[in-house]
Length: 318
Image (cartoon, rainbow, N blue to C red; front, side, top):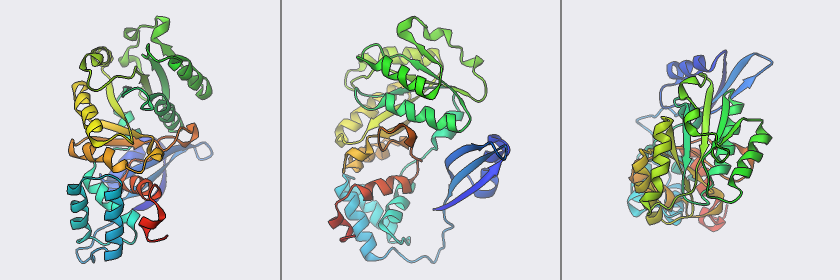
């Protein structure tokens, strides 16, 4: 992937320039305001121009890349796809090789671009999946991009959940509405949110096999006409992840943020059902450090995680 940085007077102009100059497959990695130049700096990842005469990936790189994917828990079908794809496309490292395959398999959507299409975003997931930490990172990312973020708490079940979100709002200097303090959700009017504004909603954790627990979330999401993102923790086996994805369809969820990526070597077991169920990926969370923000959503970023999480012996002693 080719990394490019350019500036634009407005974010709208920046996205128009991306479409015209680099094409629709360009991934936006970061947008930040430059107060000195009174402009926005865009960092984008541009897909390389493919050459019909490209040589296949060297056998040693192909072997290490597919070995990493197998050890990371990808299904044999996806590992075979990767080997076939690499037999027709050159790569200079296992990270580039895996990233190339993931870009083919996963519909990556930059988080900021996703956020700008919606005025309200609900973060849902199982208990302990990392929703509140993800909201904090998401808010930090969007504030850095010049958006006006409001936090809304729907979590009535988790001990300390509201105080944790309140503390995060205080750190970031953001307004917080708390359902537990009788700020009813229907008092928030999406039509009154400014063009550069967005509401991020924390919710109670639900168990994917207990469909009744989704009813309240469905009601809130419909009332606020909000988009919903599934917070999907890495480390679960493929069957548990698939259960969660099937359950999430009841909320018309089509996108996920993968969390706790630094806590497992079997990230592929989480990614396999996401790929097979055709969910888009809008970002991932590598740690609970607030300043890290949402990790850019693209094949190279996930491939780097897969390679980092493998024993050195798998990488040929590197």
